[in-house]
Length: 116
Length: 114
Image (cartoon, rainbow over all chains, first blue to last red):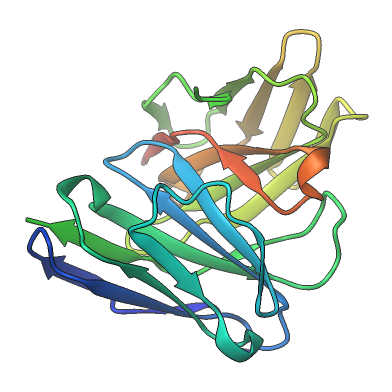
């Protein structure tokens, strides 16, 4: 069974440019999450989709970030325009249905974004 | 404000000895705690968890202890192996988020020397 995949693995862009990150969750997982880790700090929650609906976007930093999950399958996270502080590793995770506290999330390898 | 804190950025242990990784949290409403392990260029993988109604959970070489009064948990690895060298993240969940949103610490890098 394929795990969570993310594309690209690395992206280097200049300040002011646009970047789109993609995440393909494990097949059949209704829940999809985006997280970000900046400069060796904590992994921070960005948002949570249930199928195509945004369930919780409390962690999105500002309106330069736009996440979508059309059709409830893969998801994209667009940063426009990118700023220096957006640099970090962006992780995507997915999990099965269910809202119990134990809702194991499977993480992708991450996309390392560098904004120059 | 960081609600889950791992104050030791790194830890070095000899193979065969015990590794103890510590984690403190500030929110007494957290009801579930997890440890994730991360190798370079990979995403975090779930290792072990504990509900707030328990004080210990064991899975093979890994044991997690929870001290609710001190808002502290720890991960014990016995015996430590070189393959355990990785970054370990402590994480917590709050019941108000339905068990979905996970709050992570900054991680502790464990080095197990052969």
